[in-house]
Structure formats: structure tokens, C-alpha cells
Amino acid sequence: MSDDRLRMLLHSAFPKLEGQKPSHDLWPLIVDRVRAPTVWSGIDISVAAGVVAGVAIAFLTLPRALLLLAYQL
Amino acid sequence: MPDEVDGELLRRFVQGDQDAFESLFRQFEIDVFQWILRIVRDASIAEDVLVDAFWRAYRARARFDSSRSFGAWMRRIATNAARDHLRSVRPRTGWVATRDDIVAPTSADLGLSESVGHAFRRLPPKLQVVATLALIEERPYAEIADALDLPVGTVKSRVFRAVRALRKELACKDIQP
Image (cartoon, one colour):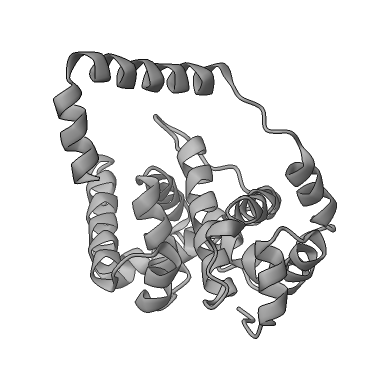
């Protein structure tokens, strides 16, 4: 399949979308989103706890490695 | 994108002033919407992604350098939000796009273009975004590179990989027009 042929088929499958606008005012949705309190999911809390635990274990078992890491940062 | 933004307005935005944020939203809303629409190809999804993009911008306002282009920064955020959307809906197995806004081709290419569309939607999102902008929307490589914060060479390479993947996918379906 030539590049031109592929391009033509893509244009046929995905026509250009010109000059469209949002169907309604989206600002109120953005304000709601901005004002919504940050909710921590179970996964967020688990990851944060895992990182803290990992750093603590590394600090206890490999203090020199942490110093090396701190130096690199 | 319109980018003659008052420096004072940008400074207020960075400080969290919601009036300044609304003013920037009103100024850039349509351009950002049209940019997202080019990537996600669906107006109602583009509206959702636009809300997400401006929310991300507000959340990241402290990192914005007000001496730089707000339009370019916003476009990068919008591109990332659109790519994240593509990632979340990417078909794993046979998935057919259901879109009302596609103008049906009148030629015998109908089935073929559907297959191409289907194969295109199965590309990895990072290739799909670049290929949509380069091959379908025919945006300049430099503009795409700026929106994705990538070197132009990387954009060219992704377009090449997208075309190769598309050909491979079509070959798997025995499509050789």
C-alpha cells in the first residue's frame, strides 16, 4: 500500500473536523472540578504507604546507599 | 492559538486568581477544544477532556513560567489529557469505533476505510496522537513537536512507526488494496 493510498484511506475513515465549538458553557464544570476536594483513593494511600515503608526499610538496612542516592540527587 | 496575553493576567493566574483563570479560559477555550477534538475525534469527549485539561492547568499553575507562552503550555497539557483519554479507551481486542460524525465514503473503499480506521484506533496512544495530527490533520511537524514537548526527529520517527504498525495490522487482516 502506497503512502498516498494509506493517507487517502485515513482521510476517508477520519474526516477533518473544522470550526466546531463546545456545545455549552464549560466554565461551571471547571469551577466545580477546581473546588472539589482532593479525594485520595485506596491505591493512592497504598502507594504512598509503600513508598514511605520502602524508604524506611532502606534507611534502616542500607544507610550508606541512601547517602549515595542523596549525593546523586 | 491567541497568545497576546497580558503578563499581569498570567501573574494573577499563577497566584490562583479565579477571575484571571476564567479570563484565560474564555480566551483559549475554543482553540484548546479544537485541538483536543483533532486528537479524540468526538465533540462530547473533547468537552470532557477540555475540562480535565483546564483543571490540570489550574492545578499546575505554580509551575507555569509567566514569561512564556500560555497557549503553547495549555496545548501541551491538552495533548497529554487527550492522550490519557486515548490510553483509557484503547481497544485491547476487536473494537469498532461508533461515531456519528463520520461522513461515509461513497466509493468501494467503505469497508477498507473502516478497517483502516479500526486498525488506526488500535495503535498505541503515543503513536496515535502523532499520526492523527500528522497524517489526518496534516499539522506541521514543528507544531506537533511543540504540543508534545518532543524533538521534531522523535515526531518523525513516531509517524514512521505508526505507518509501519498500521501496515502490519492491515497485512494481518489480509488487506492489500
